[in-house]
Length: 332
Image (cartoon, rainbow, N blue to C red):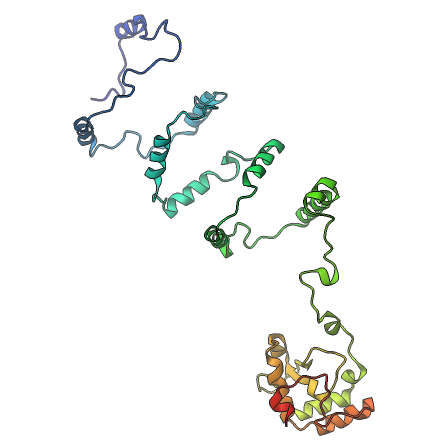
């Protein structure tokens, strides 16, 4: 029987008004009549069978915005009944809650819904910040704790690639300036410096983690011999216009490469013509193979030109000692 669409009569309303509440005049905490009592298995079974197949009256009907606003206003300023209460629930009760949730993992769809419901302004912490006291408490609570390798691995996997919230994004110039300013302010603070174990470490030159030991060689200027047209032509003829890496005919987009990356060493066995694509794809492991290919070529004219320019006597093999060759080639 449903009461939807019907109204109480005037007599019924008057009777309801005259009724005296059961707890009128009673003060303090009222104990519920059924506290400590539990339904028997029979009663629970009856209740279960009675509710089977029945759909809740509000299923699929979300709350309207007006209703949400009313609920929000009604709860504003109200202190939760269990605020500040410690040890209210027994250890057995807490253990039972934990065990009831073990193994229950939400589906991907549920996770997406939960994530969407807590984004931006919908998040309970949106626009708020922790106080200094709270930060200190969190710091004390986490000090001395060490994460296991499993936890580290899980954290690493959860933020890899597209899973990372910052994937495909970059900091703006304003953000970078703010970060730089903040870091400088921190290091100027004597307490922060003391906690970090001294002044800010220098990251210039060789102290930089990205420092390249071959930097001086790589950024050194090219020699006059390297730019000499006749010398470059001799090296090109020696290779018959073929790239030493891909064995294809050289096009206009060709590069004269220093095999050991030393720009001051222009010996014929340290210079090789390559197409631009191969030059970009070069690896350190290709050095020995290119050297072995150069030794097989007839470089007499180029070596003679090199010796005339530098007026120095080459070694027996015609290769300067500064170039490292594989043992098979060096013994020939």
